[in-house]
Every structure is written in C-alpha cells, then in structure tokens.
Image 1 (cartoon, rainbow, N blue to C red):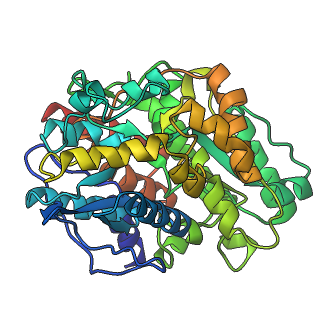
Image 2 (image 1 turned 180 degrees about the horizontal axis):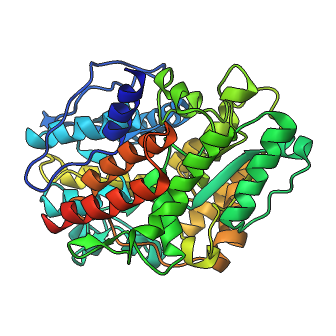
Length: 452
C-alpha cells in the first residue's frame, strides 16, 4: 500500500487542467494562523459600493502569513475593498482550481505557475491584462521585459511575474564541511554523484533528488543536449537515452545507499517544505544533505531548518552543460480570472504587488527577486541574509551563464508528468531499470503527445 500511495500523491501534485475541461477534487476547508481560508473560491462581488475579491495562492506558512498581511494592508489602504485570502499546498491548490474552473468560479486573483499558464489561457479562463497595461491601471515600466514576456500567450499578457528565481540546489554546509566536500557552482552530474557518495560515507547523510521537482530536473538535463522536453505533438528528444541519466541517479542511489529510501514518503507530505528530508527526519538515514528546489525557497527552508544546520549553501543543479541547462524563471505569476466581477480592482491588486513598497516591505522577496528593479533595489538592504544570498546567486552565478527558459508546457504535459512520476517510483523501488523506464517514458510520452 505504501508504494501505491506515494505514486498517487505525487501524481496529484502535478495534475493540470485539461484543454477539454477542468475537473478535480477539492479538499475540506481549513484556516492558518492568520485566518486565510483554504476553501474553493468563487468570483468577487460588489454590494453597495463595497467590493469583495478572492486571492488564491499555494505556499508554506511563511508565505501564507506574509501574503495575508499584505492583503490586509491593501484593504487598509483601499477602504471598501475586502480581500479573502485562500491558500493551499501545491497539489491541493491545482485540484481546487480545476474544480473551480469547471464551475466558472475561479478566484479573482490567481497565483499562476509557468507550467500551467498556457493551458489556462488557451481555455479562456484568464483575463487579458494588455488593455490595463495600456491604460495605466497596471504599471510595468520598471520590469525586466524578458521575464515579463514569459507571461504572454499568443501575444497577450495573461500573467504578471511576481518574482524571479532560478533552479537551485540548497545544501547543509555543516554536513558538507564535515565530509570534507566542497560544493562548487556548475557541477557536472558525475561530480555531484561523487559528492553524494562521499557525504554518505563520511557523515551518514543521504541525497534526495526524487519526489520533488523531477519534471523540471529531467528538462534541465536534456537542455544540456540542446533540447526542450516538448515539441509539436511529441517529446523533443532524439531517443530514450537522454532520460537514462536522471533515472540512473534513483536506481544507483537507492541501491548503493546514498539516496534516501522512497518509503519515507509514505509518512510525510511530498512538496511540503516543513517535511522535506532536507530539514525533517529522525536520523541521518532519513535526512538529506541537499534539496533540489528554487532560489526563492531558501527563506522558507531557512525558517524551518533544525538547530544542527547553522548555514544553508546555494548552488546550481548538476548538468553536463550548465550554461545550456540553467535559466531564469518567473517564480510565480498573478493572473486574473476571466469571469471576475471586479476586473479593474483585481488588476490594481497586481499593480500593488508589483510596485508598492508597503506590500514588498511585508512580502520581503519570499517569492523571489521582485519584478520591479526599483523595488528590488530599495528592498535589498532590509532582506534576510539568506534572501540576499539568493539574489546574489541569481545575479552573479545564473544570469552570466544561462539560456532562455523553455516555452510553457503544452496540453498533454501533465499526463507525461504523471507517467514520469510513476516510472521514477518504480525505478527507486527496484521494479524497473533506468533503461526500461527511459524507454517507456519515451514511447508512451510520445503516444500521449501525439494524441493531443
């Protein structure tokens, strides 16, 4: 039962809406310490001059509290506007949005991810923000245009980046120092694996690359070959061989003992920062010395790290060609529901998020480097050292040696991701070899994409 439950949970984490229609499962309502509810949202209303809008996002406790405080500040600055903040864990969030989409009851303001933007925009679920940019309701004059363009679909602006980040490998410097291992930027995969073996031998700590951002990791690796994951109606790789190195990490790592055992995920919530093996676990065998994530997450991990982790390091993911693999990414977007009753007010909330120091002094770059260069410069001195480290990492390590991000994932990609996660688990449990899993991903993945 444990093996199957992990596959089901992880498949749920990456399920997107389909182009034919959005369906999903909603979770029961809960509330965080700040009072933000996690119920499925409805569109905003306006009664007697009072405006009520919903704002939805996924995230950790740090993000939840800061976001709700920033929303409360907006209501304070704009009397008559009430904002209902609704948050969820990553997997539940997309299931709730899918359910809300089917009922035409999406939240007014939606935290959107690059992976799903194309699907929601093509489904006519999002408001075109271009007219509001043209009439001055939304001011993006101080934004990085390359990053801003990532929010466009077919030339129309459907999403505004609310932070800039990059793939990052966070690591426990106390553990790597104890092992005598120096973690350098732009490691090759072979160098990373050697470091994993040495750290396990010297400290007992294992590695974790599975059950996190596997979909992004495989894309990162094949970018080194000059390929993106998806082409027109197919996987954009020449052969199954390109998928083998990623699966090999799971196969060899679990077999040789330097990768965490997949069974630990039957007892924790995948995708939860607070329960990630990097910061959670009773012993070295269940703890990881590193985590594959995004640069904007360093603050969340810093907030919940254990006492035996005095310092968190940050570096690039391993790759055969780091300059081809690495990229800057919109950390998240904010979009507006096409069916909102208050489109102008919803857009004003995004403008507030982007340009207001009142908001950003509360948010403190938790979602990534602010889109506005002016805001980023003004905010930087007040940020925690870990966040400043992430900004330095982006500016000095990633930006000088990176390539354009891949296009948003097309229809069918969510099904390929589910397949990938199932194969990942089978390899980790020793039920398939790396070569077998790679071939099945190549064959079935192409069948999925060709049918869309």
